[in-house]
Image 1 (cartoon, helix red, strand yellow):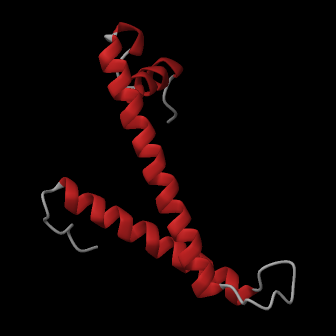
Image 2 (cartoon, rainbow, N blue to C red):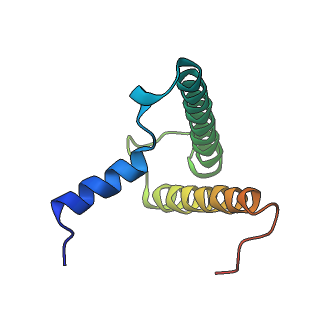
Length: 103
């Protein structure tokens, strides 16, 4: 069963956050600063993941133009573990330091 178009629009509007046009200039500036900080944080996380997984998984001799099967699977595992750890840390920070339930 697919959701109807109005329910999708409602869900998207709820996820979008407050109507920025109705905010005071100071509130807009605070939201912009928070969004900028969040974006910088995410870029830094991504760059650390790329650097770490590159160092761990990629042969430095560059014999081929594409990743070989071993490198490809290593990168898949490395990035998956990295994001899983980032998610666990985020959950712990959100829960006041409590570890997330074991999966």
